[in-house]
Length: 105
Length: 299
Image (cartoon, rainbow over all chains, first blue to last red; front, side):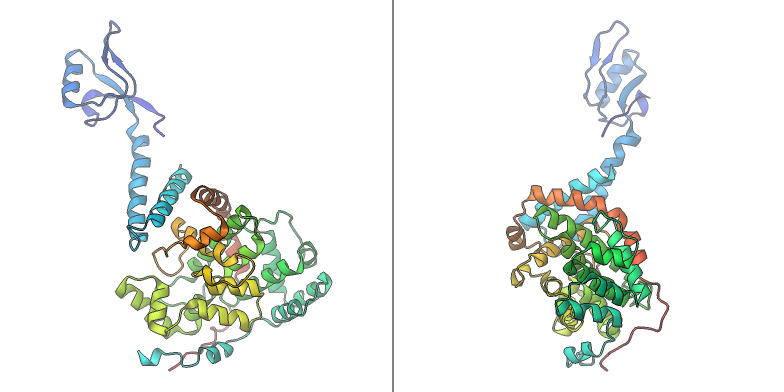
């Protein structure tokens, strides 16, 4: 799903975006690990060490499935509005959601 | 509301125009146990529009027969009488309700038939999963809401009241039908299927697809169509006339031996066939060219 990695200027990356690869200084020393969230504190620390670009998952690709899931959940909130607490219907909703997300991909 | 009451629904339905002469004759032959494909082909050939619809449906990837035919004779020879009768019945009934005829506001006939075709495709997938007859499930899926399209086209005042009730009370359209008329589309569909001499299993599926536990058929077609209808609504293919999902019957799942894993497999199988349903509806349904459907409204 998150298959495209891009290097973006550190000041433009959204807060708490996950790093897609480890970030190292010119000597090869690890500054931040893969998957680490880019908090304000980490951002400042990296900038102080001269880092200007950081590897993140392409937000255009990464946000699409998320937005699609959100839209689907809203649709199902409406379609299943009469059965919000019925266990069988909740299970049905889950498999329909999975199926439609897979189909959309 | 009293002017909306159908005092004698059976009489009203009997007054509706019949199916085409050829289709009626074929269904009569089927009821009498005829099994000669040439006899069927000879009768169907007299109605070229019906014959073309049947060939299109037999060749439809959504039905999934997998052996293309080029003429009505080939179609009759490639299917046993039981399957042929179901397909003839489905085509004849669908042709009674053209997709772009004069419809009620708030009800899209084309989207309705797309929902029916999606239900048919998913019913075929469920039937394959549970080793039932996919062709029977398919044609029953196509016709499962026969009663609703009949209400829409022949009882427009009552149907407008049903749509209004549904909007005001935010209920399932079947509950709105029951509140306005005192009965729902399954009753209308069952009566009409009997009146038109559709095969008994199909009539049973039409009658009980919302309460499959009441089915008296040996074939679990009502349970299959029940599940398929709900899956089609969940996939939002077409428009059955409302925007809600009825309660999935646990009894239907039990009868069919379906668990969630198998149901997911049905979705995958059926989902693959959904790309062909637009073409199926376009080819089987005629454009609205003749006079408006007969109205049997009670004033």
